[in-house]
Amino acid sequence: MVLIKRLLFLVAIFLSPLILILGIIYYLIKRSNKEFYFQSFIKVYCLSFGLSNMLMSKFISFSQTNFFKKKNLITSALQRSGYYIFDEILEEKKLDNLINITKNLSCKKNEHNDIKNIFYDNVNPYKLIYAYNSEDLICKKEVLEIVTDEKYKNIARDYFNAEPFLVSVNMWWTTNYSTEASSEAAQKYHFDLERIKFLKFFIYLTDVETDNGPHVYIEGSHKVFSKPFKFLKKFYSRIDDYEIEKYYGKNKIKTVIGKSGTTIVGDTSCFHKGTPVKRKSRLIFEFELANSLFGAKDYLNSEIINNNLAFLEYSKKDKNYFYKYL
Image 1 (spheres, rainbow, N blue to C red):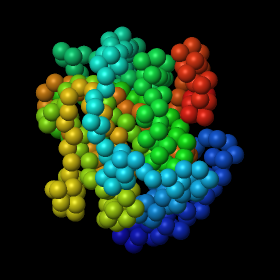
Image 2: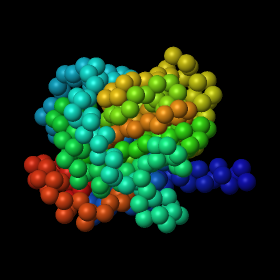
Image 3: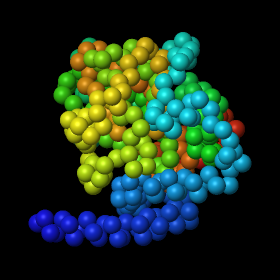
Image 4: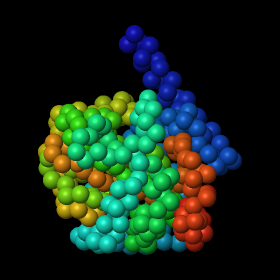
């Protein structure tokens, strides 16, 4: 059995780069992604200790006029640590607008749940996660106002040395339905790899303290060669807390607590996790920008989006930015 596993691993080493190249060609022709190619993308990242993504990003940014521009404070912090916490919180009006849209918005159904609409239950939650549909969110002016803010786009533009694409928009409640760390709720250490180079912006919409779901990240673990092979050979598997602490040390583990409106931007190719909610539910808003749409396969109901007047109004101003949704 051990021999078979080693042989399969060797096959992955030799075939994954070739499959990745075929996947890139397929994307350039079809402008869509396949799960098969995406898995090879992940394997090559792990086998090259992240070097493959760095080289692809350099190629994407090579023709950009700001390639040699001096980085600003936020970009420098992102390059060094992988995360940056904004000094200012989101203004109260925008914060209230985001919270208010949850009052009449239904959540995603469970895989085997035949209830037509599911709404967040603050009193007696019967789910760990109440996540809203991306298609519903991107059609809200309150959301579009946030994700088109030039402040955020400029940070991504500077970090990528390339024009950003809007990749995803998400908002979800995490409840105390279970206080055990859950993989489903991303409460065990992992890294993200949906795209080649990307940033995720997180906005706490409720106060977040140590006992109700703060983000935890491993400082600097987004860098090339920063992840040990004993973790990477597991590919996308979750890593136990004790393994992370043993390898990186306690001083690299950063926990982000903050008031409602706290905004964080992170290159979540670093190791990170959420923590279990023991009291009060946590509401968070998140959107992702990337330097390319190559990567994970998308599942969107484009009919909902493309028939929405608010979305059409915003998207026509920057079709490249909204390319995924058009």
